[in-house]
Structures are given as C-alpha cells and as structure tokens.
Amino acid sequence: MKAPLFTIILILFVSCSTSSKKESNDPTFNGEFLYLADAAVLNTGSEIYGVVIDEKMHELHEFCSPFKRDEYDMIQVYVKGVVTDNPEEEGWEKIIRITAIDSIANPVDRSIIKPN
Image (cartoon, rainbow, N blue to C red):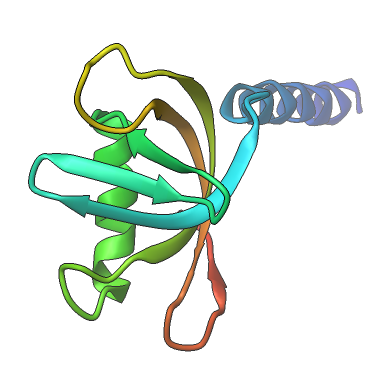
C-alpha cells in the first residue's frame, strides 16, 4: 500500500516541478507578429518592437506560418518577453526577446491556438 502512495507523490512532485520550469515570470504581450527575411516586429497597437531573431522567434514564426495567407500577413500572438532598448542605431527604439509562446489567434475564425 505504501508503494502506490509513494508513486503518486513522486508523480505529483515531478509534474509540479516540470510545469514550473515552463512558466515564465516575464510580462505578457499581445500583438501582431511579422517576420520577413532578416527582420521581425511585434505591433501591440500602442508600441512597435523589433523582435530579437533567435531560436524562440523562429519557433514562433514556424507556429504562425500555416495560418498566414501570404508572406506579409501579420498574425495575432500572445507571448512573454523581455523589452530592452535597442543597442543598434537602426531599427526600432525598443526590442523584445521572446521567452515564451502562449498562443496565437487564427486569422480566419479568431480561434485561439496553443502550441503543443
């Protein structure tokens, strides 16, 4: 009888510690995302950020691609990220490094889609 109880406690402990690693305490942003060749932007409606081109940005782009009607279509996204001043002279004044992807809105029916 002790073995099943121990197994249940172990499973709960592992699942709680795993889910906390996935969560980010960074602020949440929602806006329209676009990536073209060598530039990415996030337009929140009140602010436009350059997006740091890294693995997480490419992951977001791949997640959005099946829902784009053409290469210039902006997709509504819900992400977490860190905003900093742009150290470069060119581009947007502020840049965002995406730290987590929450979901996107399908442009056809506005349904919310979460990554696997």
